[in-house]
Length: 328
Image (cartoon, rainbow, N blue to C red; front, side, top):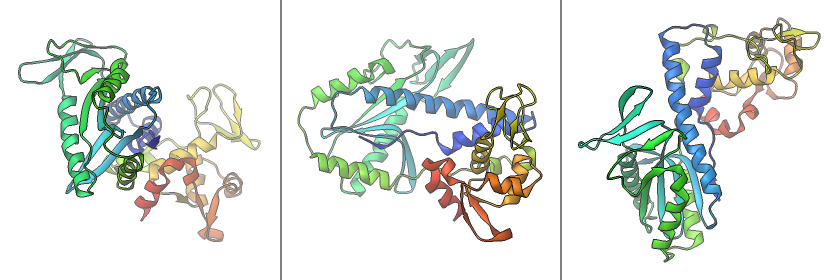
């Protein structure tokens, strides 16, 4: 059972909007691109884990993706956590290509595209997470199970070249076998299914996704962004409002619903759910408040006349709780 499903984090969604809409090609744009590629790699790594977890024949298993919780004063974040009746397993994923080696100082080195750079050692990261998770569970009197860790490289173009490679560091193709080996080595069920569920629910209740507003951190204003719906076919051009629909001057596509993605971008950029007709009208690049009102008719609204606000949170339902928390 997937207690905490994998979903794109809010930070990655923000970066997707900024990559698409930021007008300038300055140093800030380079930062956006760099962080986008790093966040996307992390998400793709976790997505690869989700596939292998779905293949598990051993079904009394609970999974949590992207868990972020607090142990005393510090937060810890785990790419994927597996809960069985015998043990907990922390899986740290790296979506990194190239040849991966380790030097005598226990530094992990990546050799890719003619470049060499050091990486955070995923097993060291997983061990820190293990200690913090252990502290969290002790604080909640739920520390009955041993905690194992492993690190997996999920990129299809990765080669691990380590003479003394630990048995809990491997490419993702070996993940299932590693889990089955752990189950075979730990045949005794220490807790009941109900107790395992209690551990999982406690972690979910204490899950605290990070709420960063990247546009504010980088001082990106709304006027720095391209407004209007992008063409869903060619993605080259902002569409124009024409005869009750949207029209792309580049590929000649007509689309009545092109504004939906643009509204989703507005929601993600601002990170609060309610908008006035005026704000939406400016974002969609249309002149008529009456046209805007028709486009917003299907959304929940509060207030009357000029005080009317339209709630767009249904466009990113998995993040509703974060938008409410940011607004408060």
